[in-house]
Length: 101
Image (cartoon, rainbow, N blue to C red; front, side, top):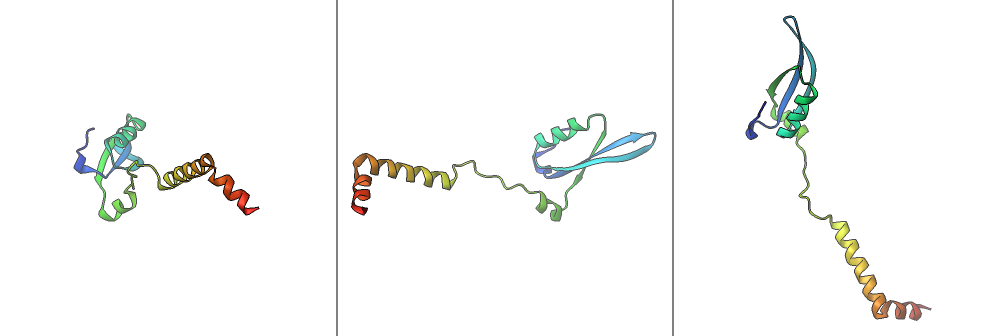
């Protein structure tokens, strides 16, 4: 089942059909086609239905994606290590330690 990009987020529901009865099996709110494909493969052989997610429900399931950039603490740590290495290489760190004693 292909979903349009503007359909997301959508709730997928899986039902087990026996005779003329549909028994509910599972429901999942998905935000991408990949998540929908995983749900549908997990419940292969089951009847899959979709339903729109109400605005109040979609607030709970919105994923906060990070930009993929380098974290700020890592940049700070790298700069600190570089400063200590330069201070040691120039002798300033040794001079400062000797001055403290």
